[in-house]
Image (cartoon, rainbow, N blue to C red; front, side, top):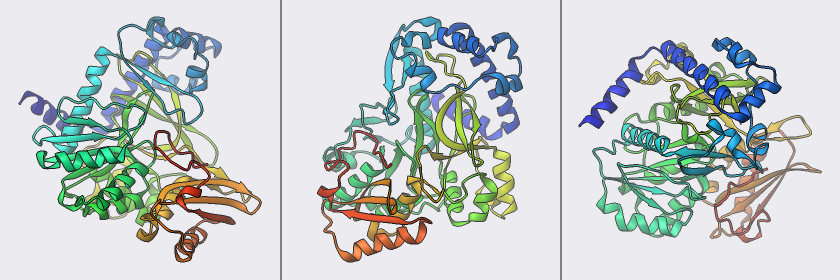
Length: 472
């Protein structure tokens, strides 16, 4: 009873607290986090000295934003790869309960070191979100963790099955245990979950009869892929009271598994952004031709900023506000392109377009995130893999016949797009023409499109889903 009362009071606080007050509290915690790092972290002391920024000179949030230099992976984990203690509070690694590694997608690994105290708080935070979104405190819940690389999800409220990236184990677990639970939460990466759902259908699982939720991570979720999943599960993502949630979560290894997250309300707004380009242009500056993910975050855990770059785009910059952080990163550039959106701006823009009934109940700030990778073509056009994904998942006949893996590169013809079909899909002229038509019609660049049978795909024939796929 106490835990559920605490959850109710916390939600009430977040729903009722003025966004301006939340912003003020977040700024105060950011200054405190800076002073802690400046006084206690050897590497950060040296970093500030090299940039001639005395800790005593940073007294306001304006000082912080103007004078505190931005960190990144190269200035931290690459520079101190042989002496990571210097990135830690007091230059020591003590009482470490868990080491969490990044995927190495950039070619460089980074880490989060989690103390026992921080691990308890992290578990409580995960339980809070699971209970808030899925009501796991009252519903007997099986969470199937399909994340690769030994990534763990810690919870005291749900049963957890760690399957890693073995679709046969996922399917067997669902067949064996679904009848014993009120609901199942499936956590994994887009293409792997796609394979599990498709293979599960072939194995006789009737998805529409299950109470199944899906949390997707590792990369941005294409909205058309969400629609494809919804069709398999028989749910309506535009329905506020939909029985299931297919949502995404964005984590950064250096900060935690769940930093930015979707809710049913934000999913409905993102789908509105997809349908109404004028609304999208009004809400989100920069790159109006590409649909970003729209996510909430807790401003009392992370201070979020933009680091401006060319063409009205920015990188997302984070400061860890958690007092227990072993590596307290300050103004750390994640290299994910995105913009910050205040709740007020969201509310006002929705009202201006007569969409006030879409306004979220919880008044937390938001980010719109596009991701990291894109390829620049000779025409000067920058193409994101996310746009290609949206196009490939737009039509069911295409989506159900591809693995979701493709490679973008420059060629003499301009852009080369290489696509892998599923193992069970025979290559046919109608399918090839359908794929070429949807891509050529919607990509404003000369393109050479090659569709491969599964085993002929030259960029990893037997894909095991352990590593993030390199689309470029």
